[in-house]
Image 1 (cartoon, rainbow, N blue to C red):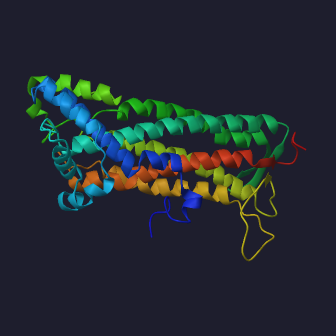
Image 2: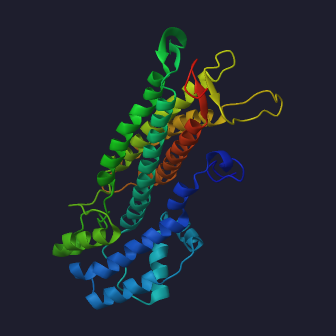
Image 3: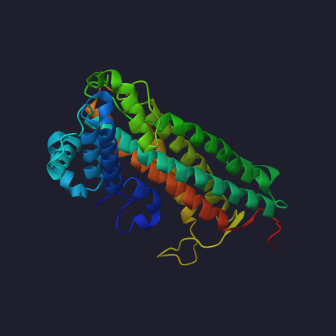
Length: 353
C-alpha cells in the first residue's frame, strides 16, 4: 500500500496533483540537474576548472535525459542519490567539470528548496482565492443570524458573519506568513564537504552568488547544512494553515448535525448503509488534514537536531515529512475553497432565500 496522497483510490480524497508534481521524482531530479549544470557553469569562479570546460559540461548536463529509477541502487548503497547521479553525469557526458567542491547535501537541499518555494507560491494563490470566497460568502449571508456556542453549548445569538470571520481573518495572517517565509527558505545550499566551503577558496562567495542567481534563489554567507530552522519554520506555517482550515471544517461538521441544521451544503457524501444521510465529507477531510500536519510538525522539529556539521538521520527525516505536509496543506486549501462554494445557507435567515 502506498501513501494516501498517491494511493489508487484513497488519492481520490487526498491527492493534490499540482503540489504532487512539484515534489515528484522527476521534478526533484530536474532540480538536481539544474544545480549541477549551474555548478559546472560557474565553477571557474572558484578555480575548479576553466570557463570553457564548465560551459561545455553545463550544456551536456542540460541536454541529458535521465530516469529517476537510475538512482535507485546507488541510493540504497550510499544513503543519498547524488554519488550515483554524479557517476552517471560523468559517464554520460564525458565531462570532468562536474560537482567538484560541492557535496550531496548541497544538491539535495537546493532541490528541496526549489520544490518548496514553488509550492509556497501555489499555497499563497490558494489562500487568496479562499479568502475571496469567504468574503463573498460573508456578503451573501450578511442578513443571517445563528446561535453562538461556547464549549459546544448555546450561548448568545451572533451574526453569521461573526462565524465566517473566524475562518477568514486568519487567512490574511497566513498570507503574510507565507510571503515572509519565502525569503527565509529560498536559499541556495552550498557548503561542501564539512559546510565551510573550504574547497572553494577566495572564489566561494562569487560562485555561490552565481549559482543562486541561475536557480532564482538567494545566496548565503555560509551554508545552512546543520541549521534547519528554515525547514522547521516552513513546517510550522504549513501546520498553522491546515489547523485553521481544520477549525473551519470542525465548525461545519457540527453545524451540519441533524437536529442542529445550521448549514445547508450542496453535495456531500453518501452512505452505503443509510441512503438518507448526506455526510459532510469535505469538512471532515479538513479536520483530518489538520490533525495530520499537527502530528508531522513534531517530526520536523526533531529534524532540527543535527549532530555537528551534518546528520544523516535528522536530514533524511525531513524527506519523509516535508513533502507530505506540503501536499496536505495544498489539498486542504483546495478542499476549503470547494466547501465554501457549496454553502447554500447558514443560520436562520439569509439573502439567498
